[in-house]
Amino acid sequence: MTRMKAAVLTEAGVPAFADFPVPAGNTAGPVVEVALAGMNPIDMFLATQPGVGFPRVPGNEGVGMLDGKRVYFSAVSPYGSMAQKAVAAPDRSFDLPDGVSDEMGVALGIGGLTSYFSLKSGGNLQKGETVLILGASGIVGQGAVQLARRLGAGRVVAAARNLAAIQDLGADANVAIADDEDAFTLADKIRQAASGRLDVILDPVWGMPAHAALLASTAKARLVQIGHSAAVSMPLAPAFLRGKTASIVGYSSSTESPDVRKAAYAELCELANKGDFVLPTKRMTLSNITDIWSAQSSSPNAKLCIDVNA
Image 1 (cartoon, rainbow, N blue to C red):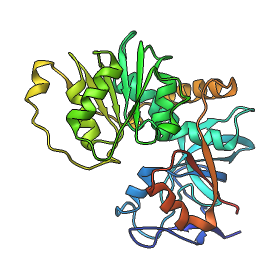
Image 2: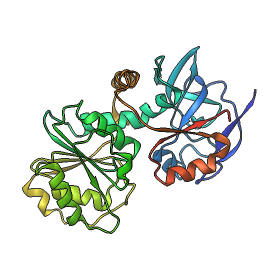
Image 3: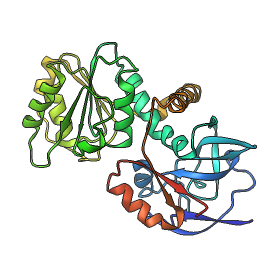
């Protein structure tokens, strides 16, 4: 086998289903037999960037077989995870325990770890604090709602446009975000749901919802900025932040050390095996990569997992 089926970027944009050379020789890490690849917003962004050049295979994570063991892995470009074989980062391949499905193994990666570390490290969540999860219907948001109390939160508020997707996640209060409301109206709803105290805001959306959350925040609040699915910018007169000494903290879970990530991934796998942490998944086929790209751009409420052998 000298060539394999893959999603292939020949230019910035959307990949095509095509053949690609099998990784061999002096690669940057071991070669993995891929079972499932994960689809993430970051994959769409990186596909628009020069990166290591073209052609290349996109995909930052996956589950597959390495040295006879089932593993979760982070991929190294140009041999990304959206192919039958990929190159794994040597220090970011973690054993996948029995009982955890391939789909859940993918979902616990970028999605699960971002949920976990954004609250614990990015937000420095302290025992008894009130947490607001914006974009709670997304994978990171759903994970964060479930993990917040385990990490010490005293009250958890979930906010999303799709309330149906978050009803059973265990938040103390759910807030509907309406397309036609302004930041001040949403801020009033958040204050009521938070019972007047708001310490940590997890923000994968930016735009109006983030503005509203900052308006509703209380003394020494931290907004952890991890994405901008709602808007890339927002009008913000920051004077009101100074009196309450609130802060906006940029964060990426990729900054955590491999050992710390490995331990956190094992913890999430244990919770998943006990049924205490669940993320919805949707299995799609590599040959339909254009549809997968479109589905991700529509902000699915499930983790898209790509079967690379179908």
